[in-house]
Amino acid sequence: MRAWTVLALAALCVPASVHAQPQGTASSRARDVAPIDLTGYWVSYVTENWRYRMVTPAKGEYRRIPVSPAGVPIINAWDPSADERAGNQCKSFGAGAIMNVPGRLHITWQDADTLRVDTDAGTQTRLFRFTTARASSAPKPSWQGESTARWEQVAAPEKGGSLRVVTSNLRAGYLRKNGVPYSERATVSEHFDISPLPDGGQLLLVTTIVEDPVYLNAPYITSPHFKKEPDGSRWDPTPCSSKW
Amino acid sequence: MLIEVVTRLVHRVRPVGGPHKAALAYRVALRRDSGEGGRSLLTLIVVLVARTACAQAAPTVVPSQFEIAGSWAPLATEDVQNDSVPVDYLGLALTDEGRTRALAYDESQKSMIERQCQGWGAAYAVLGPFGLRISSQSDPATKRVVSYTIDAWEDWMGMTIWMDGRPRPSENALHTQAGFTIGRWEGGALAARTTHMKVGFIRKTGVPLSDQATLDWRFFRHDDLLTVLLVARDPAYLVEPEIISKSFRLSKVPLDFRDPCVPGFEGREPGDSVPHFAADENPFLDEFIKLFHLPREAVLGYRETLYPEYRKKIKDTYVPPPPCTEDCGVSGNFVRRRGPTP
Image (cartoon, rainbow over all chains, first blue to last red; front, side, top):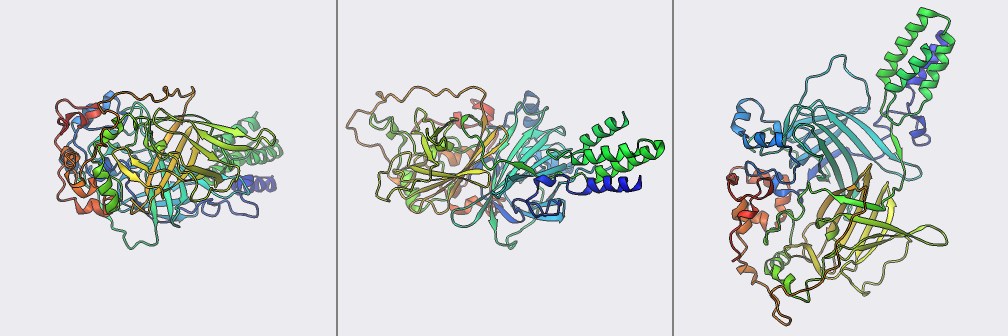
């Protein structure tokens, strides 16, 4: 029995998806099979939604966001000072909004199966876990929630691919600085794609889909983009602020 | 029975898109163990715990090409042209010449009968409000795709993306509104480049794009979502590329575009002079700035305003506009509060 058990266990921990790996690759760790390299420093290039991202829009404006009737009173009651007093100054830096906040990303591998995204705006950390192991008890909701990640790899002999991330278990936050809400039941789905720039640089495109059965009538979809930077010399962490 | 239960459990923890090899291994192991009662159960528990701990979201293999033909409905969740207020160059990095030309533009030009149906250039595919109706054309002999066509709208000339490897024409070849576009599949996306465009616009408010401009496109498909990335470069009018990304949702019904443009009298007689402003006397210069309390250098398209450092720079001086309380547009927007045309 023992031999068969060992064999079965070995089969489990060996590449779960042998056929999905590039030929000649033995490892199944997410870092080793990454079809694209997202690591490095990236800076927001704010050519879209400028008025909603670079400055705080007027209270009550939620243009372009499919807000449900339940969301409107929250929008009209927005009080950044109250948020600050309640320790909720990171509400507009949660996973539902953080990629749209102008700033820099520093993407690294925390370990072979966890991609770490640090943001200097709001000094936030997101962890994209490629393993499906769960903690024994459900963690408390947080600004960045729990993210599971998966590579989408283009079939050989082509190279390239994409990263898909799904995030839930979020603390309620704001989609926009002026208090347009998402609830704890929101889910954020993201696709990370890389495109070469004609001048030799690289662009990171993050197609972001926020779904919220409470405060949204339809998915809220944005696609912020980032330029790759050669190093972290412009990395400038700043704390969350509900007023800025 | 036990084997089936275990197999089902194994499938439940199997990563999305993964194979069934692990499940088969369980079956073999469990069949071997099937006569050993408690030990089998123990094995099952150990196996499940191990499988859960080791479960890995292995890469999903996606085709190197995708079906792009179809109707793609626009999603109005991103502002590309902002509010179409005349002097609004937010999110652009303009040269001084580009800014001057933009400020000299009067939107009444589009009321001239000879310009009403002029349409907009290729970039309007992602700048405009419409969806994309895309079809493919095949070689009747080889059945290989020769081109993709994005159908025209009322005020857009459409676009053909040539996929057959044909060479780009001479620099001196005809320049058109649509330009000339060559595409190829690259890294799971459709990449294309447009050249040979006539002088046109990168924004409807009159921000120009020269005939030396190049548009680089990348079409990404994720399930029913098509995200189109546009990188516009122009040595004459842009200091840095203008980058637009816009998403579309696959439509279950074909998009229905309106009838072709039919010119009519809009207050300008044939032969009237071309409406324009002296760049430093544009009467709309301050409208957007006042309406939303925006910094002048941002509204006028200065490069530094595109980067996060600029946000920190204006942090202590920017004051948001007060809430809109009367005659507000959709979603609390201020545009309807605009004053009369100067």
